[in-house]
Length: 309
Image 1 (cartoon, rainbow, N blue to C red):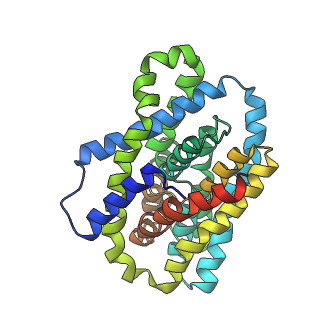
Image 2 (cartoon, one colour; image 1 turned 135 degrees about the vertical axis):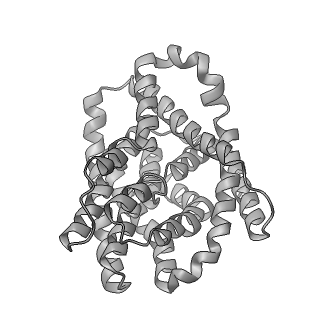
């Protein structure tokens, strides 16, 4: 089986990190690529969203939102009862795994495109919607045990106006209002260059993931297993949600990829504010050094081969 070229770029970055090469992208460029991916995915989804009745899309989103609410509730008792982690850590990690990774979604989109597999192009709507429920559930789990703090406006700002929601949601709105013809002048940047810039972004992601391997000793065997096996559980829940939503096989595959992913952008910022007692390096190392590489190298090809005939 031929590897998708963007996965090879991830491998290049990971190798550079393992041999401790001076390979980091300039911080400003890495941040710019992150913002680019969010906006490009939003624009693409918005153009397609304009072609469908919004009521139908929102009805399809209901099972997907249910997945976002249930995933942290599945994670939490596993972390508490089997892993015996503190409440704060369990609630924080559960929120990370109930939310989604935009980078994983972008890799999934690029992988399906390279194979010529069709899917519902308005799926970025689901990504935006899935940013919020898991954060709320994670905070509720912590509050129920008397952990965390009331953060008011600062927490609301992180939940509803984080850069993931703002840029992807803004891109969706611009794409939907402008339509195909309106977006055409910027298509050379946001469409034609997408896969190339994603490849460059993945070089950095591979480097970051490999650099965090030194923190694995802090995770322990249980969390290493959790970071590898939980994506499979999330993918199975994504298959169920996508099937209930009536999506195509490509759409079901993408929802499975979303279910398998773990956030490393929106949720960490919100958890630092709402549950400062949680050790955020555990969640970030899990999502970046274990779950993200697993999904890129193993999970996405596996879900695709299993779900798309």
